[in-house]
Length: 286
Image 1: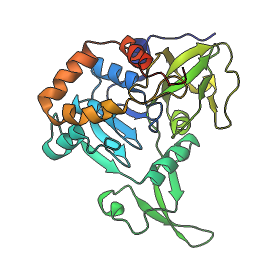
Image 2: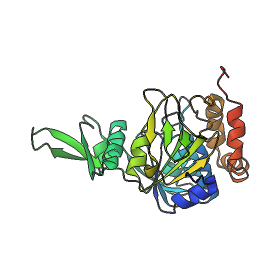
Image 3: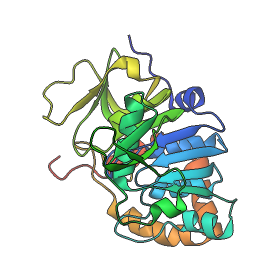
Image 4: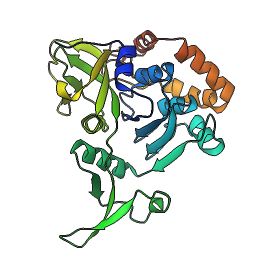
C-alpha cells in the first residue's frame, strides 16, 4: 500500500544540499509546489537541470538555491527574460551562477541516455552552431560503422528528479497524460524521485493514448498536492494562469520586490495555497 508523505517530508527525503536536480514539465505539470518547498527548506548548492527553465527556476536561482544551471532555453514564455537568472549571471546576485547551455535535442537525448543507463548521448546535432565553442562538454565522435561525425554529450543522471503528475494509485504507480515533456526520462535517469500529484485514486480508469504510467518502483516519494503545478496547468484539473506569467516580469525585475513576493507567497505559505489558486482556475467546462 502506498505511503503518501507530506510535501515537506517528501522534499526532505529526496532533495539534499549539493544535489543535481531535474525539475521537468513542458508548460504543463511544472512542479511549482515542490520547488517552493525546496526554497522553504533552504536547499543550497544545487545543480538545476531543465530543458526550459522558466518562473520556478527564476525563483530558485533568485533565492540562492543553485550554483549551476544546465539548460537549453531560459525565459518567461511569451513575456521575456528571467530577471533573477539574468541578475545571477550578469551581476552575481545573490551569487555567481555557472551555466551549461545545450540545444533542446541535446537535452532530450541526454535524458534518454541517462534513462537507459548509458554514459553519453550520441545524436546528430549542433551543426552550424557556436555552442560547442562555449560548452566544452559538447564533443564529436566518428561513427565506427558509417564514418559520420556525430555529436556527443554526457548523459543526464541527476541525483534527484521532481515532477508533478495527475494521479497516483494506491500501490504507487503514477499517471501523466496531456502535453508531456521529458518527465518519464528524467524519472528513469534519476537516483531518487519525488512526484507530487493532484489525486490518489483506486484505479486510473480510461486514459488517452499518450498516457504515461510510471511504475511504483521508479518513484521514491509521493506527495498529494492538489494544485501543485500552479501557475502552470494540469490537464482536466485547472488551466494555466497566464496573468501571473505577465505579472512575474515586474515582480522579478527588482530585487526587493522579488524578495518581498517570496516572503509573502512562499516562505509564509504552505502547499495548501496551491489548491486554493487551482480552484480558481478550473476549466470552463466544469
